[in-house]
Amino acid sequence: MRTIVITGASDGIGAAAAAQLAHEDTRLVLVGRSPAKTRAVAARVGAEHHAVDFERLDEVRDLAAALRGECARIDVLADNAGGMFSGPALTTDGVEKTFQVNHLAPYLLTALLVDRLIGSRAAVVNTASVGARLFGRIDLDDIDSRDRFHPNRAYGNAKLANILFTRGLHARFRSRGLTAVAFHPGMIATNFASDTSSGLRRVYHGALQRFLTPPERGGAVLAHFVTGRPDRDWAPGEFHGAHGRISRTHSQAYDPLMAERHWEQSARMLGLEPAWGLA
Ligand SMILES: NC(=O)c1ccc[n+]([C@@H]2O[C@H](COP(=O)([O-])OP(=O)(O)OC[C@H]3O[C@@H](n4cnc5c(N)ncnc54)[C@H](OP(=O)(O)O)[C@@H]3O)[C@@H](O)[C@H]2O)c1
Image 1 (tube, protein in one colour):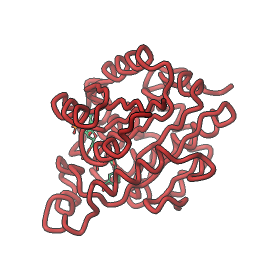
Image 2 (cartoon, helix red, strand yellow):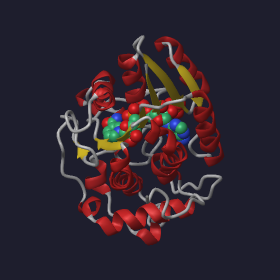
Image 3 (cartoon, rainbow, N blue to C red):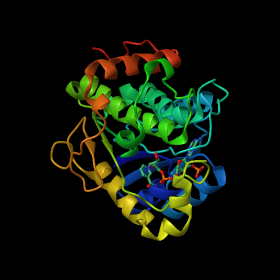
Image 4 (cartoon, rainbow, N blue to C red):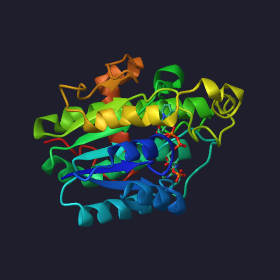
């Protein structure tokens, strides 16, 4: 039996993927923010669930502890929760919200589960975005994009962070059996960008919405990476487009020094050893 953990599973792409992945040979553990929505999706697909707010790192730590207690193995961790938000807004942890919800919280969750993931020869599937290339340009002196805040810039940098994290995981853990991949799901009609001052709100929630792809399609893209085999169906360490093939992303994603420094700075913000993961 494979155990698959999906965050951001209470709505949109994650919920659609969960419905497609529900199978008697699969143990599904769904993570969402809203307890009611998460419970409802889990009941619909016959999954276990946890409600966790990624704006609170103490809740992420509790989630990791609960998963470690409940899951002897984790075959896939789909770090999918995220979105574009208004801001700058500092969380109770003193971090800009877009950066924390999209990057720092899943980075922490993955770090706290890493030995379980290695032991399971797991795949970490990161829902990133073409927004990394369109809107991103990371300044390590403003890693959470709180200065000169713009929702697009903060989102692009956070999704670029997802890709850098994928590359960092690949560099450190591939030789120990853990694989990591990042992908863009497509332009999907979900709850995405419902709480932002970005012009993208009008695209996702106005008249243009009918030109977007339905959530089931986005769910199918996530499900493809969850069920696919590394090296056969996708390339470990790489960013892929919604078509499933490797896709070019922001130039900073290919800068090894940027990947190292971003990894270490993220670790320091979380009180982790900056060199964690080096064998
Ligand atoms: N839709 C697109 O076109 C598109 C394009 C590129 C990338 N993406 C990425 O795809 C992923 C899924 O987004 P979606 O389109 O499915 O949007 P969505 O319908 O808004 O779903 C977002 C999911 O993330 C969860 N989430 C949001 N804030 C959270 C928090 N503070 N703590 C814990 N969970 C939180 C939501 O939980 P609740 O519903 O319970 O609040 C929900 O389950 C995101 O990473 C997004 O950046 C989407």
